[in-house]
Amino acid sequence: KNQVEQSPQSLIILEGKNCTLQCNYTVSPFSNLRWYKQDTGRGPVSLTIMTFSENTKSNGRYTATLDADTKQSSLHITASQLSDSASYICVVSATNQGGKLIFGQGTELSVKP
Amino acid sequence: DSGVTQTPKHLITATGQRVTLRCSPRSGDLSVYWYQQSLDQGLQFLIQYYNGEERAKGNILERFSAQQFPDLHSELNLSSLELGDSALYFCASSAAGRTYEQYFGPGTRLTVT
Image (cartoon, rainbow over all chains, first blue to last red; front, side, top):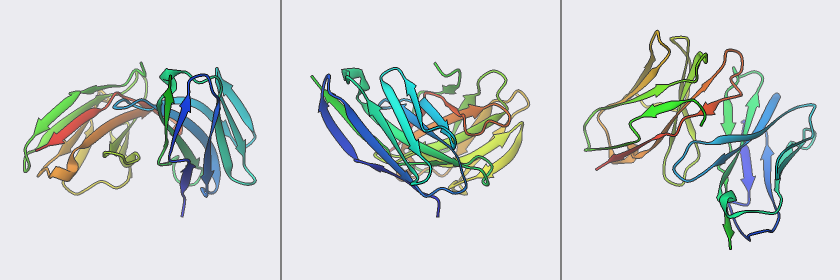
């Protein structure tokens, strides 16, 4: 069964600190993986997208990594800001399901002053 | 701003009623997707339309239906509403052949009392 699991479920960090969120997936055959940021009550916004051949991609203070062999991805946030408080969702797409997206449950990040 | 618009932003209605949620995709996008996000739950895929035709179905209840019109806007109809239908409903759109690159609207918050 195609699944995406994220850890931790929630995380509290102090402003200015770094953090890393994890995503493990069993989706096969793998097409691509995206990280979305979802502010409370708002629509998800894409941060990064990686295909099989890419193992790292950055978007400002956000850096995503992908290990297609171990089927793991991480999202590293550097020098966190209060505005980083949100849910971060890992989304994986399989090549044989018409591009159907499989969503993780998300990691709820809270950045405190 | 993703370019996807949804109306209304909020909707409060009683059990047993019927509501219609509206979505306008980004200019040029042919695919529209509907998602449900209940409190503290991940995004659940409901249904996808491509250029007016139903393309994929997810966990959509029989009480729910959707359609995509010739101008590509879409409507999600929810009938015989139950308390458990209270949720955020998101619409997303993507360009042809880019199902994995979905842009989400701001959502409609439905409250069933």
